[in-house]
Amino acid sequence: MAFERFKEFNIEKLIAKNPAEPRDSSGLMVLNRANQAIEKKFFRDLPRYLKAGDTIVINNSKVFPAKIFAKKITGGKIEILLVKRLKDKHSWTALLRECKLGAKLIFEEGLTGEISGITPQGEAVIKFNEPDILPYARKYGQMPLPPYIEKARAHAGLPKSIKSDKEKYQTVYAQIEGSIAAPTAGFHFTKDLLAQIKTMGVNIVYITLHVGWGTFKPLRTEPCQHQMLAELAEISPQTAQIINDAKARGGRIISVGTTSTRTLESFTNAQGRVEAAMKWTDLFIYGSYKFKIVDALITNFHFPDSTPLCLACAFAGEDFIYRAYSQAVKQKYRFYSFGDSMLIL
Image (cartoon, rainbow, N blue to C red):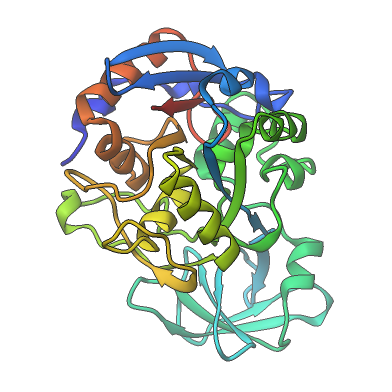
């Protein structure tokens, strides 16, 4: 299996249970690929590494409260993670532990559902008696926190889910609802920090990739055998033009997160120009992938068997990332979704 050596790190106590307060007080490890240097900074120091003409690209997808609960006919409670609305507006794909065809699901306020199918990926297809269940999810649903955060909270004697998660598990610039997991590299930005960066003459542009469960689906094979699940992404004509113009003038394209990076690389043609579109992408970046548009990357510290770690290693080199993780553990950086971040130059 890939990245076995990353599993030797004991990071259980380093898993962040909540984002830093204020958000830009989180740790920032700066990796310079040119000289293999590593610096320890805070995220608020990011402007030191930026210059006029750079373009920061951010995923503005918004997480919706996709975790809802139902009762079975027998009375047992069942947890459901909504994944994707289907063309039949009554139906959604979802993840749940028990996936029996024909099973009836009973919710609050008269909402009901039935498992009408199972996808090749093992998702349940639930047909609801209402055409739009998003208002229900917003009212009764919980934010779909990664299980390791809930586990870490439970070990610390904390509630697995708290009301403030609807704000905490969201970037400050989230706009377009559709993700079931947050683009977590953006957690560290504050509105003040974004304003400061803009005054430097740095472009900040927004693209959209609605994060599905394929982003955090663990690798069970070697990377070359892993199939990424498709996610819906969009880059507007105006944003594509800003990125292309900046690149043509020699400015750096700095991608915030692996979701932004996969979107940019998916929408960049062979001539190195970003094309505006809305489309599904299943691009999986790993190994010796040749990056076409991204010059620098902001990303968090990831699981060993994860596609984001594969991307980070493809961008900076596995040995360099391994050395960075070694230092991060020794220096007690905070790990995973609510944790600290890296800036890879």
